[in-house]
Length: 176
Figure 1 (tube, rainbow, N blue to C red):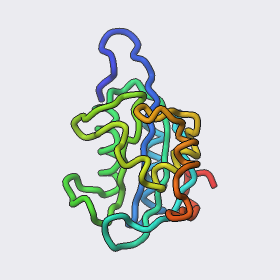
Figure 2: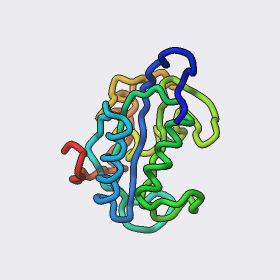
Figure 3: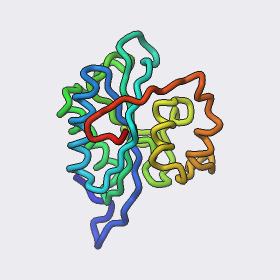
């Protein structure tokens, strides 16, 4: 794994990630949370929520968000997340709109903005997807979106939550 700075202590960066699954989701999210906590000991998780898939027909997804700090570069974080996805049975390169054993997407990496190999930051659909924005608001309401310059709590308050209901569900390792 790559550290943010090869000379001296690297600065810690706050990272927020969306996690979701619709194939054995309770099992897979529990497994992913355990692996995420092992990799990032200061991990904070949101409650988990069930919601319909977006872009295809299938079983409901269960989604949550996690936050942690790290000295890893964005590449190092993505490498770690891909390893956890693989642990949950996800194969890289699978079609985008299909059932998923595990999907871990970086929503925010500090105040980083731009297109990078493996990620566009901030995550472009963060403010359009209840299953990303709602859980993120639960763990990081005061965080300011780096391009909209508004808090996650304010963005969530303005979101049409009634049109995109989230149903809280129990997942091992997630608060309820």
